[in-house]
Image 1 (cartoon, rainbow, N blue to C red):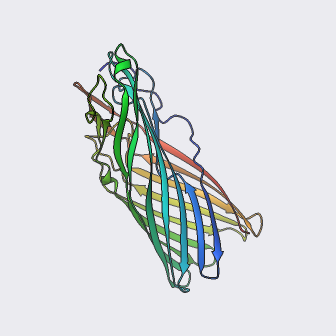
Image 2: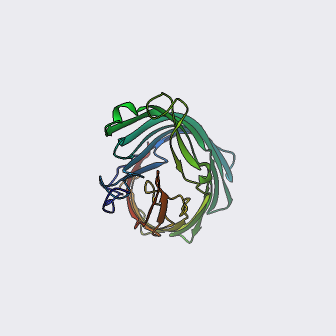
Image 3: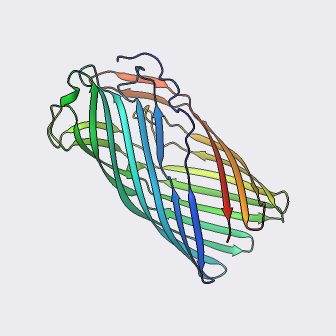
Length: 328
């Protein structure tokens, strides 16, 4: 396929992901909450002209989740909670489509709803068990396909649509106080990544590239469900300072035959450290750092009209988090 080079650093620079949470008590047993966060996201960006440009140049998927929640403490042992998720998704995908068509840029967005619920049980003093479920959310993405840089670019673009369902997940966790200064924790999470089997982009307006209802492109994923296992510990250094440690293993949903440069993911092992500091009775400051060791994923991706992109990626990730909480 045309192109040279390995694409450079497809992971790119640092990304900022904000989160915000607030909760308030309504009586002794009822609490209301609101969360704003980004549950799913993806950014990869390769150099123009690299040998994989027919499969991927830029890929960007961003979500914003707004979730009101309610929680009720039944008694000292049992509490239950639930929430509704309103999510917005924005997607941008670019690649080189050949000398005649030039570069293609797909942009689409949508909003949709989901739900979540869970409960906690305190079977004995100092030990708490939690179970949580989050529903999948189905998007009906609509947007445009724009072509540029080729002699026929002007007559190929138009409206497009695609269906995408982000996965449901279920988690179980436990935290236990061991002595006066140590907390031990463990969790397991199942994610239904098999809800993403392919992304088929359909034309909604006719052009020289095809009629209404014809397929512009189809991206096969064939992802599979995954399990993530984590363990952690907190150590209270003083009345105002707590140290945190964590380790987790996270399986990739991707597979060798359909893995794409848009998301060259592999099995991940997380190592994390952190510190919690209380500068005052009502304020809490937390800092965390995590490194992801990623098993080098390989690809063998078919490229139309013929041939394959064959190679191996080297992945890693660093995550720095900073949080301040205040009680009123």
